[in-house]
Image (tube, rainbow, N blue to C red):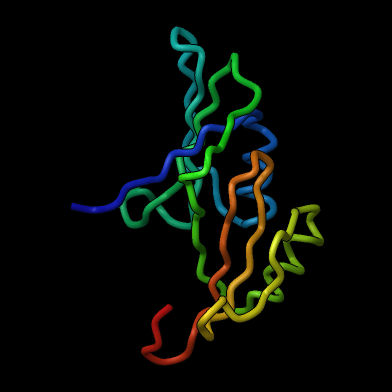
Length: 133
């Protein structure tokens, strides 16, 4: 088995694609409209779907927003420097909701940004050697 993708429902597909591609630097891998079902699927990621897990952005044409609920957590991305990653997101108009710093009760440096629909994206600063998160 292999993890293929995580699906997020988005209210404005173009706005979400701009965030994931322009702000976070992912590539649009594929996109398809389903007129009979009135939805569009767009897949974004840092590598090919055959090699890496990606994010599926699902846009239901008749839905502008979603209630995120309280069970969903976040998507995590490894970065070389969490502070620099936050600065880059901010410079491109993105929203930083937790500045880079050590995680509570630990030493791993993390930060959080928020996508246009309110989904949280965690930056986890890469550690040297064999350290884990």
